[in-house]
Image (cartoon, rainbow, N blue to C red; front, side, top):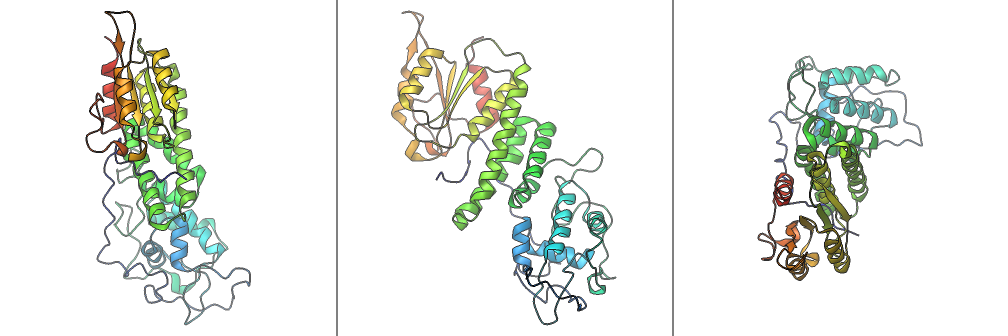
Length: 375
C-alpha cells in the first residue's frame, strides 16, 4: 500500500495548528461532563438500538474538534436531545444530523450563529430543552469574523465577494466522507484561485493533513486519504480536459512520469492541469513508468523537458536520470536533448547532479517547462 501523500515539494508549508482560545472549555477530552452545563433531564429514553456516541467520537466523525462541538452546544443550544443525570452526554442519530447540517452551513461560509438557527429550523423534531438554550451572559455573537474556537468557514474574507475556499473546510468534509461536498469545495477552489493556487493553498495542505492522520493512526484514516485523493485527481483531470480548448504553444511536449515503482502521481496531475491552463503541450505517462518505456517515450516524442516524480528515496534512480539527460536525437551536428526536471521528496535537498533543475513548487515547475520550449 502506498505511503500517504506527504508532498513536501510542489507545495507550500502547512498552515500552523489552530490555537486554543483563552475561553475554551478545557482540554479536548472526549467526554468531559463539566465542560458544558447539564441540560434538563428528559423522560424520553434513548432507543435500545441507538446508544448514542460520546462527544469525542461525534467530533471525529464530523471532522471538527470536541471543543468546537461543546462550544456550539454552549453558545447556540445544539446539544443532545436526551441526557440522563450523572451520565456522560450521548449524541444520538437525530442530534448528529443537526450537527452535520451545522458543519455544512459553516463550510458554505454562513456565520455560526445563523447556521445554528438554520440547522435547528431544518430539524424541527430535534428537541431543544431549556438547559440547551444559550446562556444569557454568552449570547450568539453577531455575524462577523469567526473566533478561533469555531470551525472556520472557507475563508475569512468579507462579503461580498464570496468566501475564499480553504483547506480546513475541505479536510473536514473529507473526514465526514462527504464526497459531494469535497467535490464542490475543490471545484470552487479551482474556479476562484486557478489550478496553481488551488493546488498550493487548498489541495496539497488537505492531502498533507490526511496523510499525517494516516501516518499517526495506522490505517484508521486510509479511507479519508483515498476519498480525498480520488476527488482531487478527478478535479485536476477535468481541468486538463476543459483546458483542451486553449491554444497550445507550438513545440515538443513536456513529458510527465513517475519513477519506476513510484505509485504516487497526484503532483504530476497538478502539473498537467497547470500546463493545460497555460497552453503548454504535455504528455502524461502516470505512475510507475518502467525505465525502458520512459527511454522509448523520450526517443519517440523528443520532449522539450522530462519531469520525473519520486516520493521516496527507494524510487529515486539517479542512473536513469543520467541516461535521460544524456540521450539525444536528430542528425549529427544538430542533435537535441531534453531538459530533465526532478521533483518530489525522494530526490533529497539537491537532486541528482545530472538533472537540469529541482523545482520546489508547482509554479516553478511550470515556469521551467515553459522556458524549455524552443522560442
